[in-house]
Length: 439
Image (cartoon, rainbow, N blue to C red; front, side, top):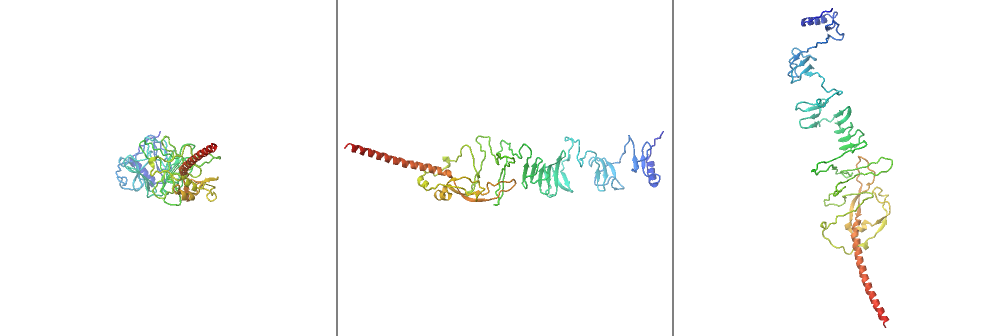
């Protein structure tokens, strides 16, 4: 039967000194109730099934000083801090400050499992700014009023992962670009559903490579909010390109041709307008367009021009329409498709007038307008459209209709006057015939 020994501190110290001063007798110390030899790799091997090791309990009022420990500032000094303000728990001295040992509730470097969103969080429990650093430089700060990314630290990447899916939210500090589900944002804000990158150098791009859903939607749901659901604005002031505030490009990638829409406008209100184009008229040159279509224009319904009397002044009846019409020279012609192949010009024989000739007769219906000579060239995504405009004379054929109608009326008046003369002559002839017959 083995005996149980209780070692006093004096005996423990003696054993320790004996092991140190007599290396041939003992290399390490074992403390147990079984008499087992200490582990060969341990200087002190304490073994028990129902007892623990009680570490010194001290009150650390300031983590930056060694106090209340005295006599030594050796790195790795281990104590249990009882001060709730500086943080109760096991601490070790790293030579500069007391460092708290993890108690199992820390966020691990490779992630945590079995977390509870109701109780587990990353942050603070007091009203103090929360800072995230990389390379010991602050990159992100959540302060008491807002979120701030350090604008003076451009060499960082900040990312958020969820369920081990990388780059749910990604910031490329080198180019100040934000990516959502992409780690290579090519725009100031680039969001994808996990697909490839598009929209190079754009302020924002939203890519949908799925089988349904829109890429981006702007929905102003405020019933009293009169602002637009979405706006596209460009402030380009150069002359080399023609930027659009909003551009729609339909790319069909199937094997056969199919109808596509570059831009669609619709309204569910019977008094609304599906698409509206307008141009600010500052009173200068009238060479722009409120709306411009290149190639064929199709429509159903009518084409209506504002003709209300309330919109008009200086109303006078057209006179001398026949003399004007008589000066007009209708011609047949073909457009020069070899010189202007990308303007959407008609490929068949045309019938009409020469604008330069009409300008001398009716300058009111002829205007000098810019037309793009590259208007029907293939458009590529993320590519600015070159400014290849030329000034051409254009004319409003619909304005000839009132002249034609007035000319018909004037011609009808002449016909009626001639008919009246013919009737009078026929009456004279009949009277002469009767006179001859009565002789």
